[in-house]
Image (cartoon, rainbow, N blue to C red):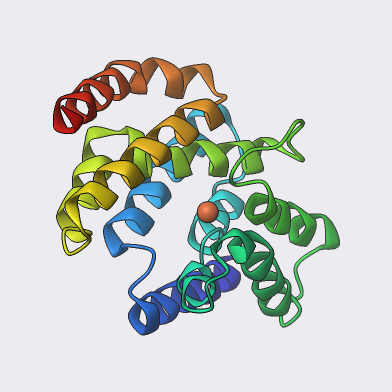
Length: 186
Ligand SMILES: [Fe+2]
């Protein structure tokens, strides 16, 4: 499993370097949050770690092709390809793939690991840290587009949040972000 975690990290950073997406700071934030949650909730840490690195691994390529909505399936297909080179058990492979497929939320999660990846992804836009990274590193966008993007993403991610531990940690931060964006739109 350690070998696959390394493969996942190497691929995620290689794609990031090539396409500039997702933000390095967002990759690291989700990974740190995911590992912490996995330890606290008794999930498989290495599966969560691999999932957080791979869940948006093809988003840069998808954006280049004007197919943002396909980034999940593209990232899942790439995950499949990377997994095919390993001798992980089929259940571990399925679990990692579902971490990617379900990272924007789903009616019923395949596993605790996939639910953790989804919640860890939310920190990119509804924690003060993740939100600040987005403001800082996406500053070249037209300002009103950036405000709209942040508003849409923060609403989407608050809805996607499912773990009580995360809702508790992020509620105040999300409310602050919402008020901040309201003021910007005046
Ligand atoms: Fe995504």
